[in-house]
Image (cartoon, rainbow, N blue to C red; front, side, top):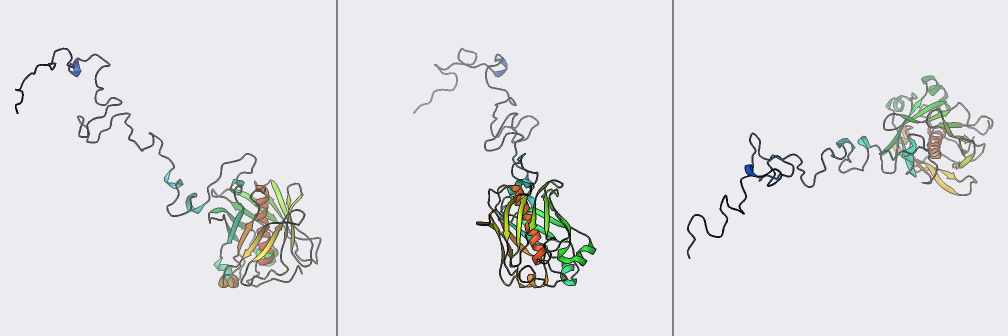
Length: 326
């Protein structure tokens, strides 16, 4: 087998002849290959530009699989933590999209039909019986924090009036902004004083009343009316004759306006023997219809706190439960 001799071969264009591309420097503008660094130029993987480093990428180069320049997605702090439920940092629930018809901060309640209320254990109160301000964490069914509630009362009132004490309560969101305000005036809770029964007013935003909880006179079972800002009854609450929590939950039924249908409940959950015996840090569950007005859902949170103070708040670590409303 023979090979052609070296040098120009017949049939092939030679440099300088028609059909052979001229050097790049002699090409007319706009023709030929784009120069290095020009948009669209893709150098050989081993190409190193003058004064550059290996791996040089020309201007406008966009590797596949990466977002465009400036589009890096969510910041790390807003991304879900691996292995846990998605949500805001610190275990907080993400705020849903705002709605101009909903008070700011109540957007969290739009897609919720269940809340868990956990009272914080106060060691000073547990060991000495000295009443301190109650603090609560309010969570959704997934365990994500929705609100944080703090009692606002003075030391004298807490230790002299005990569970009957008047107080304000601030309910804060993830940004430590007060979104719901509760006010409970000083009143009685016994059937012997029908003209001075319990009442709590709910505002959102603070200063704008959205509803109230009012105790109805009764002898055997606790009864409450959930009212809107106009004073119309929207729901009713009926509790058991005995509110002793003995190794089980104590349920307060949430009923329709006419009292004929149960639509939810507020349950005082059994928190364990030691916690029940030596503290008044309680666990509560609240359920209500998903399509209930968010303002009434906020009023239901207030009803849970009123029930806690009336029936499950200890005075000096002493139980004060009784039969009926005597």
